[in-house]
Length: 272
Length: 255
Ligand SMILES: Nc1ncnc2c1ncn2[C@@H]1O[C@H](COP(=O)(O)OP(=O)(O)OP(=O)(O)O)[C@@H](O)[C@H]1O
Ligand SMILES: [Mg+2]
Image (cartoon, each protein chain N blue to C red):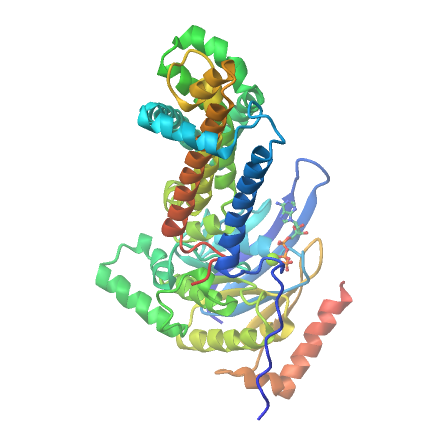
């Protein structure tokens, strides 16, 4: 009997080939750990003055301060609330408009020039206008988050809908379905994973607009905390704020990725 | 022969792209498919086969000419015709059973009747044991089996097939041809079958139309007089070789 041939040794760098989970996750964690180490090293050896880059320990200390005096919790609550409301309003509007644009050329022709015009306008430039129109309350923050998110989101949802294979639509017609039934049972169903991914990406963008939204006329929020710390050169507070925003963004991102796998186990390319 | 089921008279199809020149995809095409007859169209790539089939399915319209099904003009798609596409067209979010069942939506049958029909057609195409798998977990051949079952389950009068086995490897393709042959010989139904494979056309059909390259038109019509029931064995018969030579001749002269 011939001995079984050993499988060809695979390198970690094969095109689109799965690698062991330990390496996949381990390498990502290791990179962040390495960055933290370098951060610690350059501050501990005094290469950089603490005013420019505080030591990790200073940031951790600031974290505990903010936890104990409750400021962190208040900021997180205010910011998460603003992002959620701003993003949900944007999404509730972008969904129908994007779906209409993706399905009907008429609506694409109607809305696309308008959206293209707006989507290159910087959201930060709308800050004075929104204050003028909305005052200094939360609705001004929502509107900045909305402006930052909506126009891109509509176009992405339109593309998600357009990416549905035309053959799937045609075959559905041969089963006797009306166009509204095809829209409901086939197009939207087929576009859903893509739309879910658009949700994930646009919610991520909403986080990046947080500082802009809380730039002025705020007295609580993670973005506000960063802007205020800038005035007093509290670099440790700034870095803490940035890291907290990053971590919260990461959490929402993973929540979407996880639910994607839960909701759409059938998506091509994921066997089993 | 019996009555014509599908009748195409002087069909023209001209595409007018927004930019560029007009494309005459189909030029003056006339053909008939009789009740319970298996008819194939062979022709080189780009000659307009899919375009014609889409018109028969009611998914596209002729620029001029008349296309009738059972004597009345084809107005649009409907459940009197079943279709199997060149590409895989299963709904990726539905498993095998649900994909087949989806086609029954507009038949308004009781649940038990639906289950019975779906199960019967799963067995017909030999997919027992794979009922709960999603399309992404199926091989190409299995996907086309589901597509065939799905096109038959709602009992259309006519089956339109656009190179259903074109994307399969030679061996799977042969299995699928035999499967279709058996299924069709058990349940006679009018079939219009598109292929560019001459052997496949001869093996399956009662009659074969040959189309020429752009602009697509019918160049010849050949009766396949090999007796039924057939199996893949007939490919070894002398009559098969003769017919193949004849078809080859026609296809070559006009390219
Ligand atoms: N929407 C369109 N606009 C312009 N030209 C088109 C359009 N659809 C098809 N054509 C042209 O019509 C011709 C016939 O196309 P069709 O898809 O029917 O070919 P086919 O015979 O099915 O080819 P294949 O065997 O490769 O599937 C091709 O030359 C194609 O370029
Ligand atoms: Mg084709």
